[in-house]
Image 1: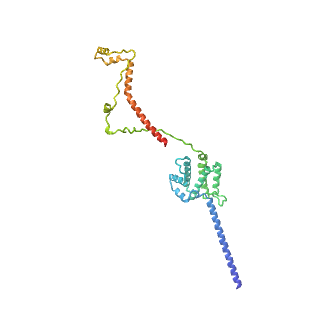
Image 2: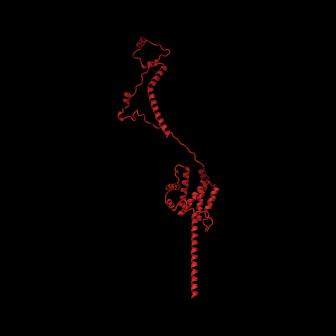
Image 3: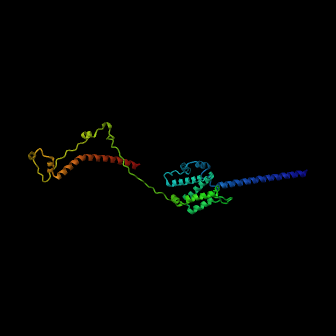
Length: 316
């Protein structure tokens, strides 16, 4: 009886040791799995820039809506007026739309977008050359289509055919225009100031009502007859050299000597061309003198108003 009891106790001890070993092995396997998952999550490029919810929401937008939303996610505010920021937004929108057209999964779209951002940051912040960028791109593609690879670039969610598509896309977009992107982030754009002059008509000063009241309107004939300033009467001409100064009696005798039926042609024939020019010039000066003064006054008033407005604009 004693031997049977000892054998049973020995069996129980062995079974308990086996259970302990099994539990320990399970714990070790669980820890190794967790470590491998953590390493994969750390190495994977998915969900680093765009989360799963953001990727799903962006995938359902149109091109214009995608542009606005990506600018908000990446905190690009002045892409409407800044050429470098507009190029960056266009770069991300084109890349996201390419991934959407290739029917990538949400994880693949997020990983591809992280790849887009890292390759652009290498130019913008790290000033990589073209050779350095290509080497970095190759290192990120390492491990695709290979099981249990020692070095993974973080894009294991893609297959070989998708990796070829990604390579062709970066070759045609980023690498082919690499110097343009370098110039975009290393050279400051020149600021061009464009000015234009505008002729603005301003009303007269407040002393004169503008426009005139309609109840004070009149026809042009009435205005010319009653309102228009009449021309000044011509002044007597000065005596020119060679002319004889006639007294009142002589002028009266001369006037009596001419008959009343003297025609206008005879009178014009007796006047010299020089005298006609002087008479016409004096009459024109008298008639146009008032009009000229009025035009000059209006031009001065308009000039003062425009000068005041220009001064206000310059003060702003």
